[in-house]
Image (cartoon, rainbow, N blue to C red; front, side):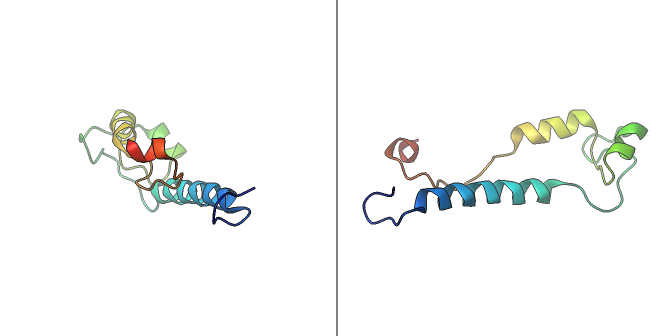
Length: 87
């Protein structure tokens, strides 16, 4: 049930768009192509097991963890609630 001028199913469309954007972002972050032997961030050697498990890896585990922590999830606010807009 949508309220106001929104059509029925509009809320579900917003949820679907948010999930779709998150999936696209995750797929875009998967390394592709030939990987590196040494980390692009710190220069340390990337362990053989990581290179086999994640073809295309360009960073070591500690550097990738730091990059993952600093990444923002989504710059768009599709919720439209007053509380989320005030933040």
